[in-house]
Length: 337
Image (cartoon, rainbow, N blue to C red; front, top):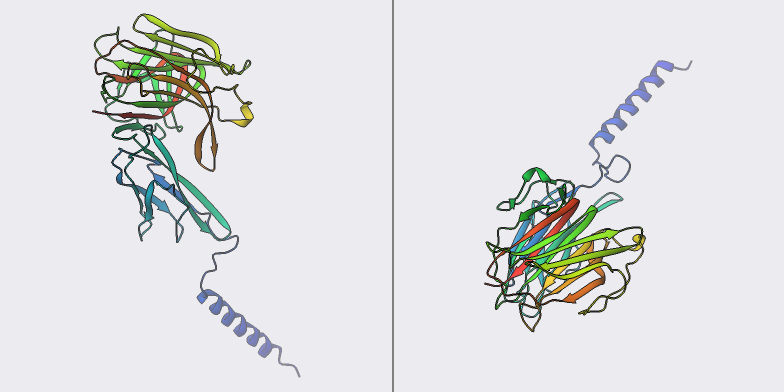
């Protein structure tokens, strides 16, 4: 006679043994139960003077390791601490390049078959220069900046949104003062005309006759932009439709028609920088951008013209919303004392 009760008890015993073994086995992270990797870096941008040095960003991750991709040759090293709580980046002195250097430290981590990457953006001042930098990509406005009307500013979406209800608009001024005389400087900011006109004012001080006003617009239907430049009360450029035409008056470097919107970012880089001839004769340029794998690079120049301005006393740089909404990020000023 078959002892069914004995058989049932044996199966129950074997099942309990297997359950105990399974519970004591090491957790296999590969598979659907593995949590997705997380890699948070704060801040996402580091800015160095020409002397270089070491700066750190905080890291938050659930990964067991964080790998560093190949570095630009002017970044000496980038290393993550053993507790995966920070990354340290050392930059070599800039002894050759006059304008700002830009690079990326790309970090990678994995969780099972899933991977995530993060790009830490690195900025360095030109040779013999200091740097003033604000990314506007965080959730808080930078300290020390002065707004004509703080209610016009909004931040938190990866950029600074700056609104105006019409000319002459509003200013948001960087606290760093610099002298345009007898020194070299480079300034740039990434700008998006969200239905508005905007740009910057340079050499902002107590004498409005010395400042340089630069503002842009962009017409998506024509795929063209305009630029206006005024020094004190004198108009130096009123070039509507010039940006993207493939030519500009007294061009400093080759310029091109604007690529189709699918081939570029919807941001533009406005640059102002001195040349070897004189600090009073800076170049103003507008360039399209392209972001690939977390790194933003200049695609083409669409406006590049050398100007001659009157002598100016030390002043500051102000972002300018002239009409409607203009968006800004990655404010960079490389200056000498």
